[in-house]
Image 1 (tube, helix red, strand yellow):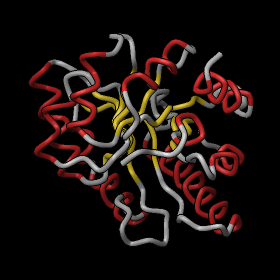
Image 2 (cartoon, helix red, strand yellow):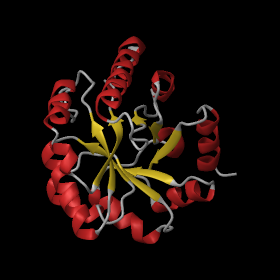
Image 3 (tube, one colour):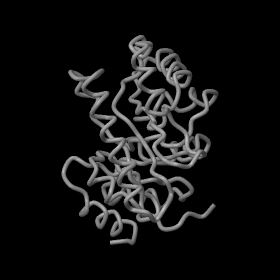
Length: 223
């Protein structure tokens, strides 16, 4: 068994039933993605459109590509035809663009509402209040080609486990709130994407259903 396969097995052994692993392959070569694929991994996360477009054609068709990075509206049309899920739907404008493009290609695209839970200003996402306002407005109900599947968030980059835990719990609580208020009968609205290589055990404890793990599987990135 190669090191990538061993790492995937090690991470999966720490995940309870119902929590899925998104192997974050950004900045890692196609050969390493193939090793992960051969070990049975099918969900991969990329955060750069150009990099994803270069990798997709040379890798197996049945890979589920999740887009996890900040997505500019002018890049939407490049990934909407094939991407399985967009974790980073962070504005009404972006959601409208995804919907329009998905309609043009005859797809319904699964999206997560990205929520800003970290203390760092550099991270993207709706604030809790902005997201409440957006959902209250009802505008999202017209987006027939977007499937709302849940929420995504990134904790502050810090060694303070209490802070990270608190941020994850705030996202879990927000998910519960909007699930009850806006998606109570919608079985698709079931995902909480939170947790990365350094903090995913805390995320799982707080209720994550999708963990985005890169360096623990593929090693440190080569930029």
